[in-house]
Length: 272
Ligand SMILES: Nc1ncnc2c1ncn2[C@@H]1O[C@H](COP(=O)(O)OP(=O)(O)OP(=O)(O)O)[C@@H](O)[C@H]1O
Ligand SMILES: [Mg+2]
Image 1 (tube, rainbow, N blue to C red):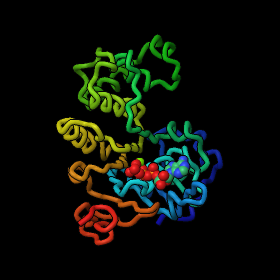
Image 2 (cartoon, rainbow, N blue to C red):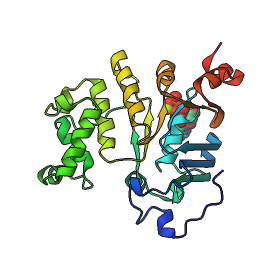
Image 3 (tube, rainbow, N blue to C red):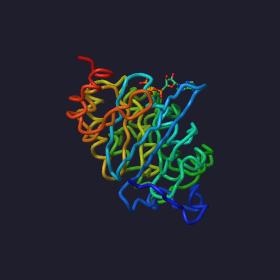
Image 4 (cartoon, rainbow, N blue to C red):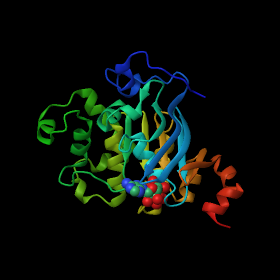
């Protein structure tokens, strides 16, 4: 599946000159292709010959025991960690192993870390406004006038993340869950093609977890999502496709019911 690809233009292979997000070449329906990926830390293989394919618009959950390599996998996709072997393609032509972290983000891969990193002194609206700008200088960004289209984009995102009523509230006064939603919003205003979310519901209330499930189901289709989560109730409420990672490799893949019935998965992760 999707092997032997060559980018005609070497500039294209490292993402130069490619249009962000929407211009991505996904003609075979695959947004992310990882083949034979290995990552070693002082001889220890955090990822070991890993193969993973994410379809356009898919909502994929990645589960697995502590230390399985889930976060390292996200580090490879975002360019934070370079694999020692293997291929990583965004769409058909963008070689993630040769792109900088900044270029990867600009090309349309957004990542949410577990700890929210919003600007506490700025309002919800201002945080979204800032995230939307290419120029990350805070004051230059906030002084420049928004176009109608940009304002509409921010309005739509505030509705999506359930914070339209809190637009003028300083982010520092939001609940933990609301800060998480704001941070997801800060990714959405950049219109990413692929969203990576590492343990998004950790520390959330039940109501916030339910809202997150609805939010992700709504985002799927328009975006591709890769969600790492230990909360199996949450995974069950959103996932149609689950990948189980163990010792840096894919142990099982399928519907949640399928992987839950897999003997090896039960042995290493779910317990009896
Ligand atoms: N920078 C690093 N240097 C050395 N070892 C590392 C480094 N990053 C990760 N590891 C190791 O690689 C393995 C995989 O770690 P990773 O954080 O990817 O696991 P994970 O599946 O995200 O686990 P968790 O569910 O606990 O978040 C672990 O054994 C970890 O200790
Ligand atoms: Mg992790």
